[in-house]
Length: 305
Image (tube, rainbow, N blue to C red; front, side, top):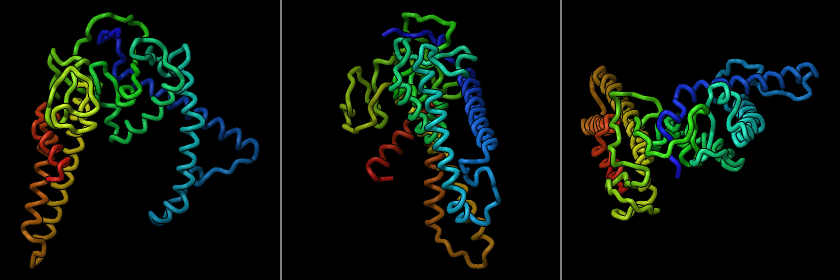
């Protein structure tokens, strides 16, 4: 496999600006279709998305507005955005107009153009990157600076003005963007040929479906991908811990205002203890100390936490 030098890979800022340009282009197409429909006297009726009124209740929004909004969104994603991204990224251009403007391209792991099927998979896998609280776009899931959908579809986003280099790339931050003092840098021995288990931290050069040491499925994989998953877990655990601490503090303040507190002491102990544990595990993972997070994940997997 031909490796690419670090500076050959598209930076986060280039990818973000390319995405912005592409979204503007998709919106121009949508507005053009709307104007054509307006000129023809609206033979196609639009949903309440274009005649918006403040809903009187959440139930009213879900019943009257949401179906039309959802159908309009799905139509734009499937019939406008999907062919735009998949066809252009699988063509000889190897990129959308936004990527062309920013001087980047989509390739396979060898630097060649990808097939339409792979471009289609990469496009729809972006839904999972969004579903991970946008972490699939922010976290690097390999030392090739791959977003989640890049890693699963085995694709790269490279700069057009950089050639291919047959050398092991330098390691970068666990984020797709550089944060020099935030997050632990992988060691020099952590290459793409290394595999690791999230739970027991077993390391091996052999590829396997499950961990050869603890036997857990879907927890053993390439070091870069596992580091990315741990970082994503760290952020999610931090948010859960912060939410529990906020809920506990709010209940405690309300209880202190009552003449006779009703909540038992053990309830506050459980909320604050669990919130503190989750927040500590998440924050420690953000700063490269994953032992507490691994313990929490292992406990959740066994049903002990």
